[in-house]
Length: 79
Image 1 (cartoon, rainbow, N blue to C red):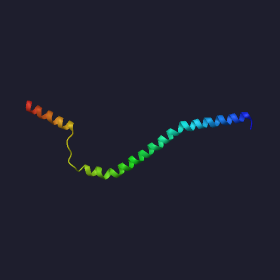
Image 2: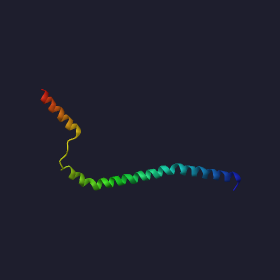
Image 3: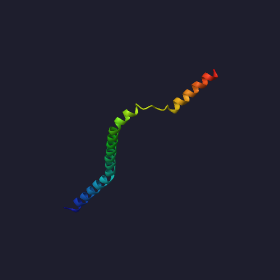
Image 4: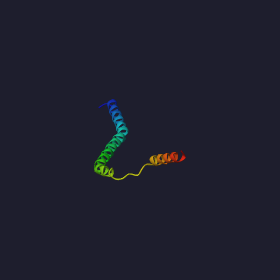
């Protein structure tokens, strides 16, 4: 192996090493995101029956509904 071939090989190894250093964090992040997404889907699948039960409970009106009802009653009183 000549000196020129050795330098070329070292340059290729250096470029490959830099590529790995730059790409590895994004691959690790993508794998982590997929794992988290899978955990979220599994958790939603387990909680689905509970969501159906909660719809049978009586609900408290939202603030917007309460405010609108109050405004309507004031209009009736002022009329």
